[in-house]
Length: 396
Ligand SMILES: *Cc1c(COP(=O)(O)O)cnc(C)c1O
Image (cartoon, rainbow, N blue to C red; front, side, top):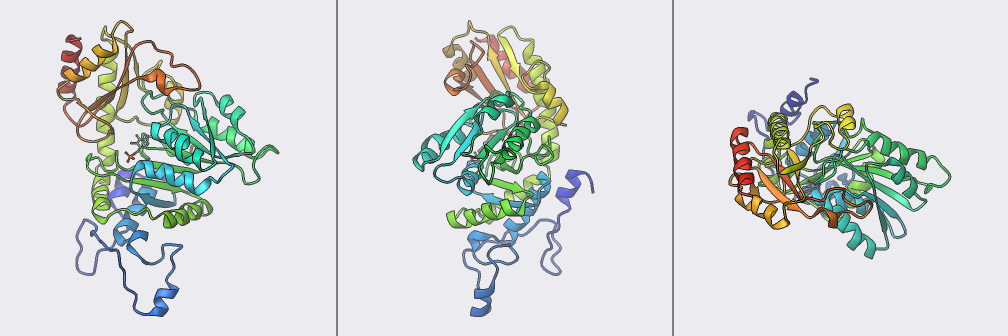
């Protein structure tokens, strides 16, 4: 079974005897009873070989963990209550007072915000680096560096970073005398690729996190995250930290994500095709200075995307010509009928958000003078979406 769609639909879940339903059951529990005190004392909490307490897993969540590991091409998965919680869990599992974390300047914003607030308060320093310049990362690695975040493409601006080159910089540093004795771990936010556009581990990441909220759910109705790795040692650090902080997910939410996984590859491909069609068309519109999408020649990191990826997600950003004021760009968004104004993406409904880019960059100034709107393309007919953008542009 080499095809991922086939693998995801044919899973090893086994229903109760003589109840061969296609869908996995939804198991819900806080308490799980043990047949004896001896069984309670001997049940294994650490390797997920048995059930101990609802917070630490049910047959439904264990099935979903196995499915997400399959999706990512990894061995071990831990589920958490949101995509952001997957980032926070990795931070808490690998960082201690005196350590430093390096984060791409174009990373998902709340990853940076957690470093600036909680991590700083806990005595953990951070630096932001230019993800498009491996030399900038190499220069910032030090004996304090224990964790390096990676993300491709960048949130909002969609530059596609050279992940193998960034990983190579970390590995070279880890092998040098300047490194922390235990080295630095690399963790990739793989929400955009979703395990479908590229394999995080083939590109060299130690850990891959995803907001299951996005493609794996696909319904815009559940929040969940995952942390996947191939390394048993890294997994145990993540798993024990997860047990101590009390992050659990509900059986009902896990069911929604299991259901979404059946169609993830089809949705990803359909939204990819629609997004590219709109992005190419929008490039020809006179109000637009640039369209950012890694599959477009000229978009930052396009050549790397072509080398490392077989697909692209449902996001593109439009940079308006500088003569359009922020108020006009807000009005453009307000004029859209089908594209709703809202965060998140990869659900059925198309969305847009205007961003004030210069305030979001700290390493290098943002190069464009005009305002930016990020679009997330849903599952509506692409001709209707194009007509919607066209009518809103006309009103500017
Ligand atoms: C949405 C998103 C997250 C966070 O997911 P939530 O489930 O909303 O917390 C993390 N990283 C990226 C790249 C995202 O797009």
